[in-house]
Amino acid sequence: MAEILSVGGFRHRPITASSGPSIFCYSLGKDILSSLEEVWSYREGTAYPKLFGSLSRGIFPLEAKMFEQIFDVQDVDPRWLHLGIMEFKPTSTRNSWLYVTSGASNPWETEPPDYRPDEYSWLGVEFVIEVPSQADWPINTLRRLLAYHLLVSHGHFGDFEPLNYGHRVPAGGAVDGSADSKLAYLAIAKPSHYEATVQLASGIFDFLHVVGITEQERDYAKATSTDNLIVKLEMQGAYPVTDSKRVDVFL
Image 1 (cartoon, one colour):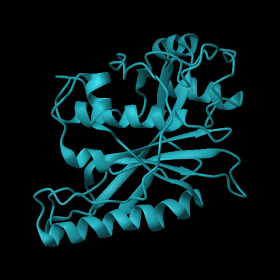
Image 2 (cartoon, helix red, strand yellow):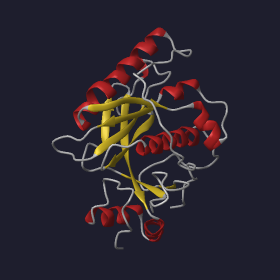
Image 3 (cartoon, helix red, strand yellow):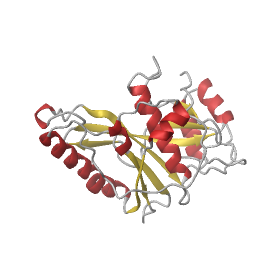
Image 4 (tube, one colour):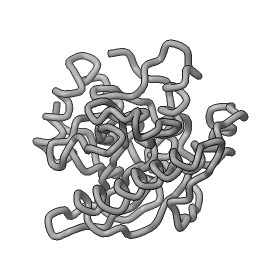
């Protein structure tokens, strides 16, 4: 599979959570807005806690300046700026910190009578990454990945496909923004250690599990497949959790 366009250099800086979810009314009608709020509330208040445990920090929303600085996009749909990242602390059954996007499955502009439960809700995906300890870099990583996915899904990058299982993404630098991390790429896999698909009233969405990989591992995936690489990573403890300081796995 061809490499996906780089999502930009991962320059990291302090970030602040909002109290979200804050729904921007835009031009939505009252009935649509109410339905959107219900779907949004169910995803963040019921589905996510059931799967991932207790929320640690609130929503980290996308920012307009990120689209401009990284992707040279100045005209951003204001609804996109209410999508963001949530942070979940470890649980009794999961030692990792988990970060997940929220909003790419929102039923924008779709009224309840038009819901199709067996079809995808809007973009039909949410991204997840797990790391050994609490950090800001996974939030920045998912924000950039989500922004890229929004743009490519709306034709900004021509014929490039929206992100999906098996894709590999150049990160434009170390995933954690450090000088000593060898993980400069992201691979996307179908999770098997939590439910891969969630049902909303407005339709379904799939979790796309993200893991950091090295250039050597990227080359192995290009020569074989991302699925084969994931097997190697999991056997050697480098998947599903991304340790940004790890070395190459044995291939």
